[in-house]
Length: 477
Ligand code: SAH
Ligand code: SF4
Ligand code: F3S
Image (cartoon, rainbow, N blue to C red; front, side, top):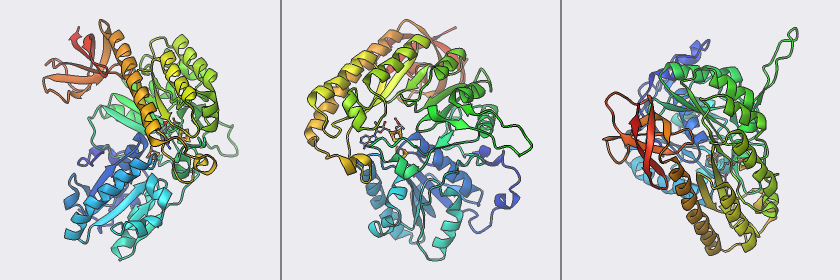
């Protein structure tokens, strides 16, 4: 969950040629906006765009929904429990709205896109429903609500990338930021709702990405994470006038290099890689630049080829293992994490064991693990029965979680006794006597505060002990 922090200064520094847009209308001056985000990093990044759009219209932000004029909840539909969490939260907003009937409640994001106008019938307190490609229309939609109407815009777009909008960095540590490089997804994995809620895949103008990275670096940021559902299929060709020669197409490897060139002091991360699309060219680019972190999130979903086929992942067990071998060959020190789904339609016990054996093969540094949750409208919901009983899904999930815990420990233990370059992200949650930050492989490192260093500095830390999630150490010069 994320709350809006108070306005930062970076939001409109780079905007040009939109004077009319930039002049607040006056109507919303000083109105208070509260926004809460659920789901993936993409949603958190979108909330920063929403904030930017409304701050340009005169809104101020608040961290307390009870005092807000407009309360937005940016929602996720990926699993049923993600949606339940949102509905529960809406109930909590009800009490605030009954005290302040003028309060506008809006649902944004993937659940808005999935349920569309139905949301207005199902949840009476909701005034406005806005899908992920319609955020530019928010000021207009809020006007409609001000005039006493309910408002909906869930149009998906083939072009919208919000490339020209500089996000207002929310809840920022001033060190790490997300940059959205593409939107939507064309993959149609059979279990997944994202292609329906986020629409067709489109890549953002490469120049605008590099510009955003430069602005962040100049504002003191030291780490950017390039975001997309499938970053390896990033592809952008600049439009040219008829008289000009065509510009070369920029793929993800080129984009990584362009962003890495911004400064050797700016760390680059990215998510998510798709096993079918990650190329050796990307791996070689990672190996070539010290400032591209040696860490890849490579969701496997299942270790069994028949299940992968039913999932429409378009790779099989052998292909995935070959991609892992390529990573180990080209970037030996690379951290690898994954996503796993247990109990997908018709998954047998033997097939589940192949997921466990895949985990043994890779020994992931980290994993996000889920029991399959059928989503209405997806290919799997249409084609296959959700036939694995809940208790079996859960038992398989527990086996996966237990094994992963052992593997995480195995990986972190290997970091003990070695020196790591760590970017200081802040104070440790447990103690203000300790700094925390991550090493290249994305493992959290905790070490005593040293007055010579501050948040945003790089330090060398030697690992001295660990838990399965954290490396504990001290700064060495
Ligand atoms: N684009 C990314 C993943 C986005 S969704 C990719 O292709 O890997 C994040 C993760 O949620 C997925 O990797 C998957 O493991 C999980 N997930 C998606 N749909 C799900 C469902 N219906 N039930 C359970 N887990 C699901
Ligand atoms: Fe969903 Fe598959 Fe697209 Fe990832 S690649 S967002 S899992 S459809
Ligand atoms: Fe959820 Fe939408 Fe992201 S469904 S995981 S918020 S793309």
